[in-house]
Length: 228
Picture 1: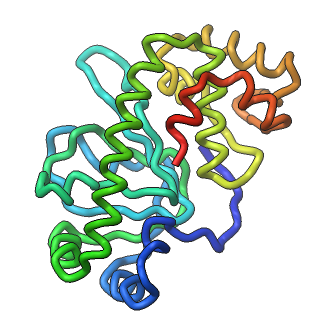
Picture 2: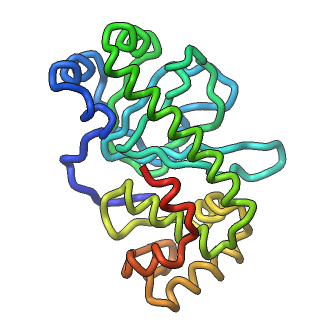
C-alpha cells in the first residue's frame, strides 16, 4: 500500500513521555525508513528490535500452513511493534510486515530493556499499550467470526485511514483479501457496495475515502472498540 502523508507525524506513545525522557529515547534509537512488504517479525522467531512508527504502518498477521496470512491488527503512530518485550518475551507471537511505507524509530531489544529499567514512565506507558493491544486482538477475532464482509471492510478502511493520515491509498486485491480472510471475489463485492453507497471511490486498487461519517455508520461497532 502506498500513500502520501505529512512529514510531521510523531509516535503518540513517545509523545506521552516527558520531553527529557523522549529525548533520551530519541538519542538511543535509529530513525529508519520502512519499505512496503518488508517482513519485520516471523512468528516464533526471536525479536531483535522494537519499532515505534511515525508515518509507517505495520500489520500483524496470523499464519497457518496452506493458508493465506490473516491480518489481525494494524500498528501505526499510535503504538509500537514489539510490546511483548515489556513482559520479557523475546519471540514474536505473529508475523509482522510493513503495510504502508514510512519512517519509524527503532530500538534494539537490549536498548529497549535498558530504557524500561531507566525510565519508569516508559514502562507504564507500554504496559497500558500492551493491555490495549490484547483487547484489540480479542475484539478483532470476534469481529472476523460474527460480522459480514462489508462491515469488516469498512472497519479496516477506517483503521487504515486513521493511521496513514490521508484520504487516498492503494490496496492490492490480495492485501484486501488478507485483511478480510475472504476470496478476491468477496472483496470485489464488498468494495462495490461501499462505492455504490458513495462512501469510497475504488478502482484498480486505488481507494479514496469519500464519506468518512457514512463509512463509520456502515462499519460494525468493533471499529470504535478497536480505536485507540
